[in-house]
Picture 1 (cartoon, rainbow, N blue to C red):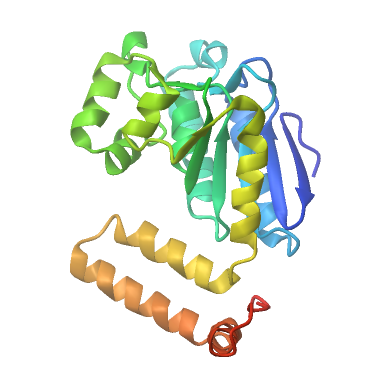
Picture 2 (cartoon, rainbow, N blue to C red; picture 1 turned 180 degrees about the vertical axis):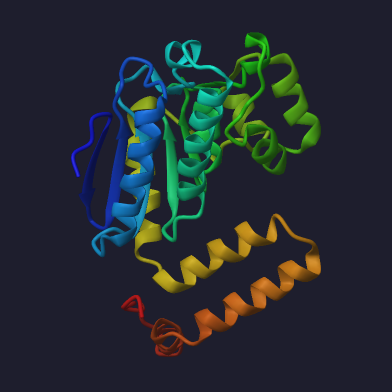
Length: 259
């Protein structure tokens, strides 16, 4: 499939996806459709074991949703755009392969929501974050009010959501919104390094890990433990489990097959 607003490259089992609407890379309906389709494509690609998402250019990861598109929408049109955005975000969040956000600049509104659905977040020391929706007379509509509090805690989430003010990379690290801050010229190399390490892990065990964590975050403890038990059984039944344990016993590096 040809993409108008996305670019991607695959190397060493890692796919790097660029949101390509510089300088601010705003998200519109077409971008959401393309993200959904591309994640599907990468899920089916056996040469891809991990995914990095970043923004094209140096100014922005994603500086929010496309306000120009939203201005012309009535309520029905806005709710349809919102449905499409939620589908795209859910597709990324529930991808079987690990996804890393490489946040190269502004991550505002929908850009923050896109980062939140990724498994891990690495940002440039020049990155800035905000949920400014309240200052436009609206609230986040792509999951920001729900996912943010699960990552940073409800008190900090309310601070960011209620004030709608910008925070820098260090504050984002302090509140655990991001996992790591690096100099801007090291952002993509670091994200690729992390993705490369994840790409070498046993694929089924990684998928089961992600399913156990994601599902468990939204259910009570006992239900989460049941999910974990089922995922553990699925991982234990694999050839990679046998290889991993044999390699440990034989004091060598395992060679995983993804089976």
